[in-house]
Image (cartoon, rainbow, N blue to C red; front, top):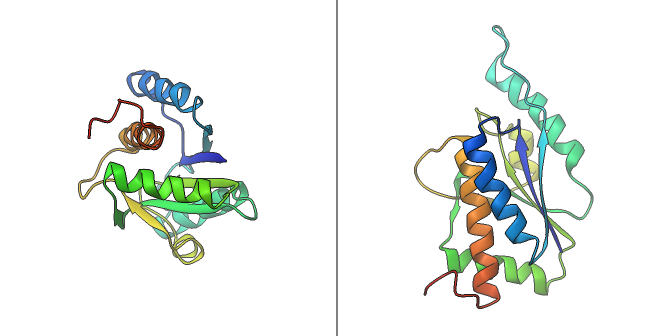
Length: 157
């Protein structure tokens, strides 16, 4: 099974990059995992948020392969506990999912086209975080999920 975290834009702050890379390294012990970034379309002065979201949607759709199971990381999504997320990941492993793609949208969220095409949404919190923080939080929670599945003592419950 392969897991991809698809993001709009790159993380440019080194204080986020180093811990994210640490979790990517740890995750490779359990699964094939990568973070892929699509170019963010810098907001132009006269560009409407809907136009920006549509441009981002085109970039996202180019990265999705037939047969991918896609989750949008979205504030309107379903919340999971760490144990709940581990069970969800384990279901995909048992169901022989080839590739799971988790997507972090741009500053204005996703276009309606993306919401319609990919109805599965996960919320990491009721609070709002920067996209760089979400990348780190997601990687940590995914790592935690795999340690729960593999009964590793990282998660103490």
